[in-house]
Image 1 (cartoon, rainbow, N blue to C red):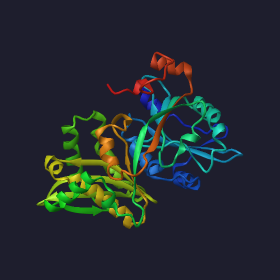
Image 2: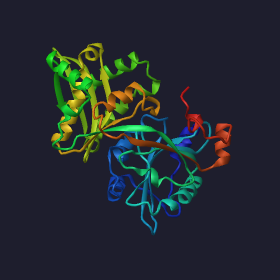
Image 3: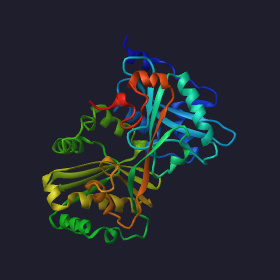
Image 4: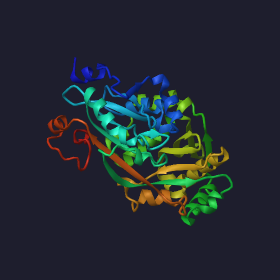
Length: 352
């Protein structure tokens, strides 16, 4: 049996006021605290665990406190070469969920005690900009501003096309003139064509190996469709797929997840037209926000951020933060070779 096997089989227990919530109760608990969303759901955590090292497991923690409850969705990853774990949020966004910040001060000590008892050395959180939960992060954490994220206001009654930057509006119209056939499917039965185009896009962009997601992740997105509500937006020219978006719908928000396009799409404004189609669909459903995400490296000057912000240039981007917590300083030093938490965290997860 390998060390990873030992970590995977190790029982994760409740400690003090921190309860390990049964997975069957996960969404109910998070929903009762006002924070149920795609990224905080059990289904998304199960899917995202497939993107991490073997043996990664989702866990929802709940701190019961006299000032109010706090829930924290996490993925526990087996440590390299030794028993124990480090914790992270699911791919995208996450962090603490609570009705108020009254119990935030109690979360840090309680989480540390739980982590030490369960062999969790460190935790990395990507906070959820739409939930605005950076204020719930324990005071013991290193809270780091990591740029901004773009939210398109798609509230009913807004003229979405008219509000776009003139460049994006012209590009979307060009796609219509050149015969782009747009479909919006809120119940996709297959992601095969999307995945083929997505992989080709990643190769063209020379993306990091992480972004070539495994078969079981793609399967999980459909298996968890009842919770994730995937939305597939496709653009075809004479029947051939040239651009596509994959989004997730939850309550008042539509989250852009992945996109793909070929060279033809890039010359005719196909992606611009598909984003407008996704926004119009969300508006027709009574949603009020299309969450587009941020730019590369969190920079508000990156071409990707500028591209996204031009869909709603009058909108104010939301701040995005990450948080770093070390629960076991000795274990951290042994694994990292330093006490320093600057840069990539935890350092033993840095891509090769």
